[in-house]
Image 1 (cartoon, rainbow, N blue to C red):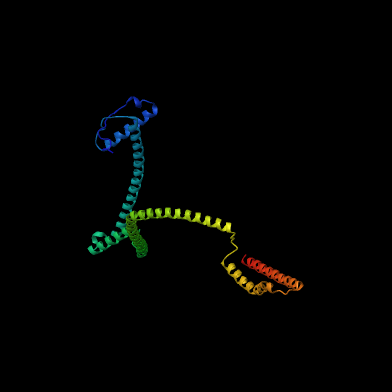
Image 2: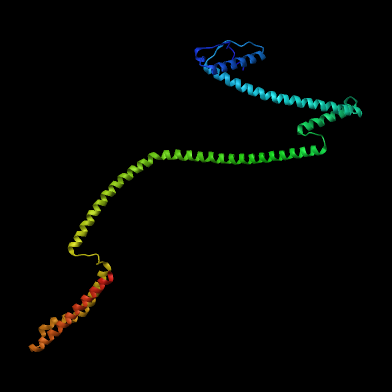
Length: 301
């Protein structure tokens, strides 16, 4: 506190601090607090100039200091009262011990030392008496705390090992990713060259596609002009060829007979009957051939 306000002196009130009664009251409180603090330290209040900011800051410090001083006084008074009670109780116990011949001066040094060690242990274990049960309870509590601390330590150690393993894996993964990134960066140039090559080939293939589509359209138009339909395929043509060969076998005798018309008998009536019979046979053969073709087309559909 003295270092913070060293170099400042008797307050010189400026125009900014003449606002009203509340500011004057705060200045008075600050003056009184500073005088008390420096007087307790055996020093005089240095000269300094009051400003609204310094007044506000010093007033806050004074308020906090007074509150803490009051609390400290209350605690100190309580401790003094307890010390007086402990001294009174110690004097009474000393009188009792002296009356029964157990004064400290009459006891052997080892007994005094043991009693002192016992008292120190009791203070360390924070127990109010030195009975065996109190020591056992305190030692049990201390053992439980030790067990809890060991469990927490084991848990923290396990978590630390787990985190360390995760860290190692993360570092290994990071190294692998860095290596992969470097490899990919090295592969960028060849891949770009390959992509340019693919782009060129794609342009060529697109041109070929347009050419083939044009040829396909030309062939399709040509087939439409010659009367080709999708219903006529290789299987149908093979089947129709087989039927044609079969019909040729069946119609060959009829054709041979027709070619032998020149050998007809001179009787015109018999010749007319023979011709009419051959015509009926030829019409039946044609109708059979037409039925076979229609059946083959229907089967292909």
